[in-house]
Image (cartoon, rainbow, N blue to C red; front, side, top):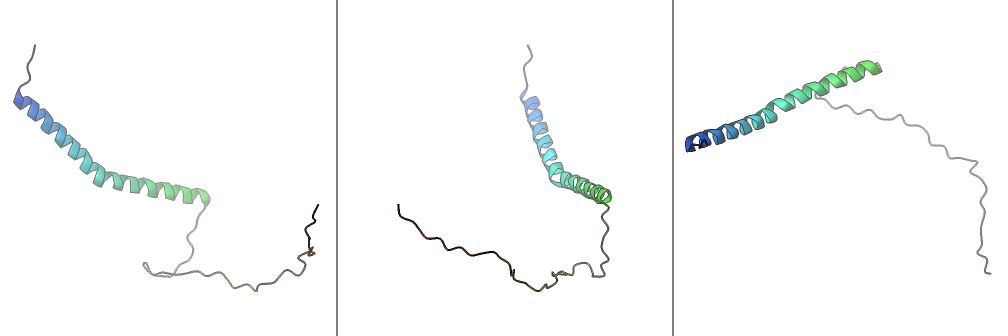
Amino acid sequence: MQEASLTGFLITISYIILIYYGIKIIGRYVFPIFLNKMVKNFEKKVKEQQGFKQPYDNSKEGETSIDKKPIQPKEGKKDVGEYVDYEEVDD
């Protein structure tokens, strides 16, 4: 039967802690970069499949431009139907 020494136990615990924090740091800094790259590639493929073309835009980066809907005259409906007045009937 083998007995575990205290130093072996402490070394094992320190390895576990180092691996845990190593994975945590890699997950925090490397994974978002990897995920961002994957999302950009996916967007590029979708745009290529749909034939998306960037519109001609002469504005500078960082400027805000607002496209407004063209103003159309409002026309009321002349033929809306017949108005019927109902009365309550007591039985």
